[in-house]
Length: 149
Image 1 (spheres, rainbow, N blue to C red):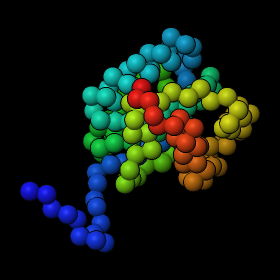
Image 2: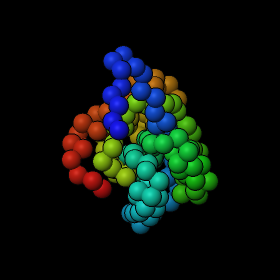
Image 3: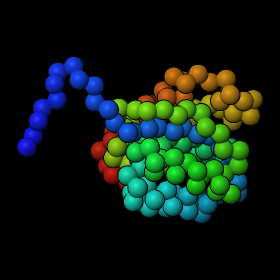
């Protein structure tokens, strides 16, 4: 039987979001293809979605979904030798996903995020949470969310 949720009731979800940054180790096309293949396969299996922004000096990734599989994905990444210096930037509960249609959106960052020099000068260490989230919200807007990948 269907029951409606009373007006004003708070809907509680177990969705979380983790954003981390790392430096690529051995960044090249085959390494990146392997990371994306592994991520998409695991994420589809586990109900995790997200986006990976990458270039030769940075991986910036957002993972979202049910708490247990998202934390497990982050733990796997933290142990993956293709990532150096994995650092959690944001971590918290969410009400809805930004990348619901993407097992792992790949976006090769060119000039729309911090420059290589800014990254080298620790721009992410000084970035406010809303600044980091804006990067992913802008990416979600640009991606159109219409194609599953």
